[in-house]
Image (cartoon, rainbow, N blue to C red; front, side, top):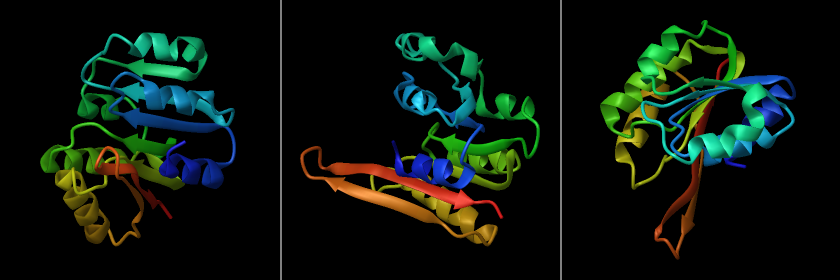
Length: 164
C-alpha cells in the first residue's frame, strides 16, 4: 500500500470513504478496495482503460464509477466535506494538478487527508503545484520518496496533507 494511503487508514480507522482522481488501469484502486476499512471509493478518470473493469470487478459494491468524466465535472457531483480522503494522480502538469488540488480540497472532511502520487523530480509540475498549494493555504506537507536504482526513478513518491 502506498505511504499516503497508510496515513489515511491510520488516520481514519474504518468505514473510510474516498476518491481516486486519475485511475488509469485500476491497479491502485484495486489495492485500495482490498482493504477492509475502505467502505466506498469514487473512481474518477477522463478515460477508461481496458483492464480497469477487470481489476475492479470484485469490488463493485464499494465503487461509485465516474468514468469517463473530468475531474472538474466529478467534483461538482460530490458534496463538500464528504470524503475522508482524496488521492490525486491525474494530469501531472502544473496547471491541471493545481486545479485538481483546489477542486478537491473542499471535498475532504475536517480531519481527512488530501494526498497523491508522483511527488518526484520526474514530475516537477506536481511538485510545484503541491508545494504552492500547501504554502498558500498554510498547510504542512508530508511526503515519501524512495529512489529505485534499477528503474532510475522514484517509487513510493507520495505526498499528503491533513485537513485540520
